[in-house]
Image 1 (cartoon, one colour):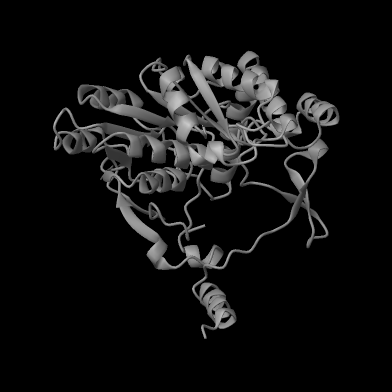
Image 2 (cartoon, helix red, strand yellow):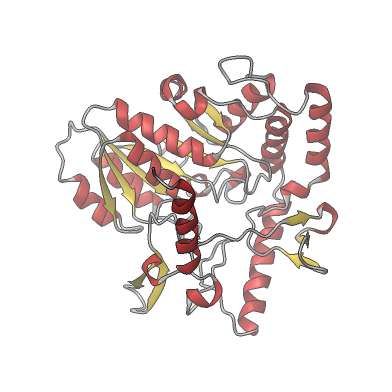
Length: 370
């Protein structure tokens, strides 16, 4: 008989031996002292440097009040899937709000940004006969999984390289359905995609475009609408995906676009249909957050000032961050094994064409690299 216990024990032992075992640090965040937290294994406050609550929205007293008020009114759960009792007025209003934020016709709210990407891309790829999907080599794991779920042919273009994308698209006849997928702001190096050039290339080849703005929405652009809106490209991408759990400080994700496309996704996407919908309190708070950051630029200005301050202080202390020019400030680590225990196979060396310098970055698509 197969020894399941031995299998799992050996597997975990191997993870630990390879430095791939994940250790979680329980933190009790302190709303009145953000970004401090109490560590359950520490007798001193911990400063959280690695979070995505870019605007401290999760600490906003008005949003906390919204959450608790709606929870008292409606309970802590939605009670069903969107198809069966889980659609509330808060869900409908939030979908209209995020669509309006991006100047799109309609929107869909998912329980997470991961689910939004995986489910939407998987369904779109499956529906288009003979579809080919073109993806930036450093796109997020949720995008990679969505493409895999579609079962369609894929082409990976070099990171932020519109010319390479153009060359790959040119390999296919005009009548072949094509989807071009990129992020606007990449979470690991903090660099921004050349969206104007990518949109132009995709348009020239008649491709549908899918833009992931999860690290930009709320924190970037007019009314927090993201990088594309900041560049005047709000109408240049067919679909835009965003997160409600980063700058907006709550949880969940969304996709916006033409009504017919949204109706198609919501009619087929498993992660939208076959799951309990987000709590009314979560959705109402996300709605309040989006509305707040559409009308207030105070927090975005403070974020930019804090980024400049942090970059200067790190440099002064001999820990210069990569010059991303964004609110994501990566710090290169010479030996990843010394701090994270990640093996060399997780890393690749890249060469900058402008400075001819080299650097090591996490290999795209590796789910075991932290």
